[in-house]
Image 1 (cartoon, helix red, strand yellow):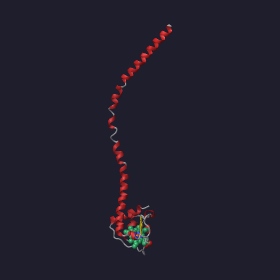
Image 2 (image 1 turned 90 degrees about the vertical axis):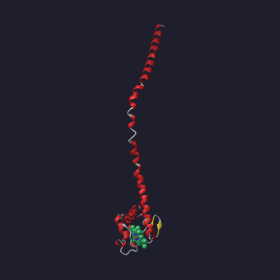
Image 3 (image 1 turned 120 degrees about the horizontal axis):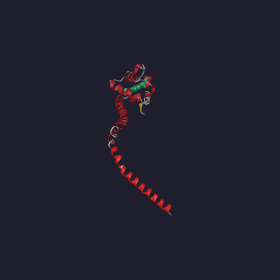
Image 4 (image 1 turned 30 degrees about the horizontal axis):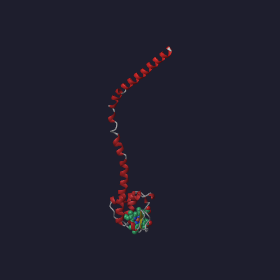
Length: 148
Ligand code: HEC
């Protein structure tokens, strides 16, 4: 009987000790988290510009090729190239199909010469000379070179 009483006293003492430790732990916890809070606000700032700049070149590239196509097709339509050439599925077949002109490996310069003075490359050609200015030549030549 005596040993049992001693055991209950011991267990009660341990129980109280655990409660004491638990309460002490609860009381201690909030204080270490206070100084940690002060360092947080700076982190989020530099992330924003890096994610914002990433999509821009892609979008600009897409818009650029669309603009090139629109500008080139305006000139091509006005010059009547489609009377003899198929470009993007439309046009005549007197001249070669230019829908994949880019895979032939001609330089931009070669294409510019071809457009204004085709007899330099094909002395007996029926393709007429055109009279595009340098900016128009560049636009059409770059567009044809991009067709692959
Ligand atoms: C009267 C018809 C005709 C017109 C109009 C014409 N072409 Fe041509 N083009 C030809 C023919 C035919 C050839 C093939 C060369 C040859 O053997 O005579 C050719 C060749 C070309 C080539 C070279 C293809 C290659 O890789 O060998 C390009 C590029 C070209 N034309 C672009 C144009 C552009 C751009 C226009 C409008 C500014 C145009 N052509 C207007 C008839 C024409």
